[in-house]
Image 1 (cartoon, rainbow, N blue to C red):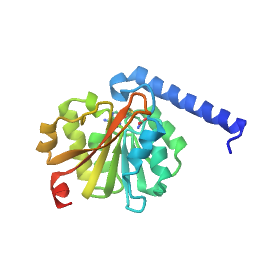
Image 2 (image 1 turned 90 degrees about the vertical axis):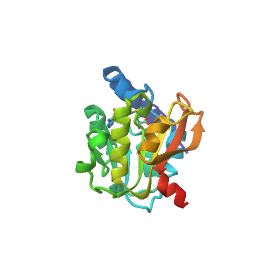
Image 3 (image 1 turned 180 degrees about the vertical axis):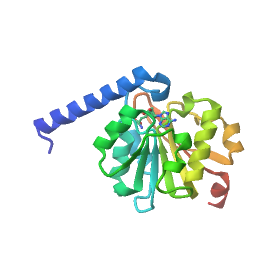
Length: 206
Ligand SMILES: C[S@@+](CC[C@H](N)C(=O)[O-])C[C@H]1O[C@@H](n2cnc3c(N)ncnc32)[C@H](O)[C@@H]1O
């Protein structure tokens, strides 16, 4: 049972997480794209797509670690998780919060060379990147890099604040991919929808 002391510590740490996020948003609003970290309901739905015994997972856009926490709660070994975060201050904080997890301070669109698993080495990518706010060119570069990292059958799990997929359908099919809706979480600020991107050829084999 939580004690008054542990509730206070939890409140202080979520307030400081919120402040870190807010600072990142003030400096780079387009890159951070939200002023509040994701809720654990959203993180849990995304993390449920992982097989904890299924090998390496990469997270794109770690922020303050709201999704990282839920990924690790699945039982995935820390050594199987790499988190990519472009913002230096947020990457530094993630290293302190998640000992043993490899934090790569890099743009997700060119992270392959720094990754431990290399091309085809990952079962899944959990993405908190603000894809909807990005140019089509950047969306293409990010999905391209993600599917170089993923093994056959692998998937990108992406949340978005729109009820529709964040990447236009023309671009998705140009890349040989398809988006499938996983679910909507209203207990998130703002409500968010989760999509799974997979290779169209893998979906046809199902
Ligand atoms: C909407 S926040 C999500 C943070 C966290 N995953 C969550 O759900 O609360 C997006 C995060 O992606 C990071 N980011 C934006 N563009 C990026 C890129 N090209 N490569 C890596 N990280 C990026 C931002 O710095 C920010 O921390």
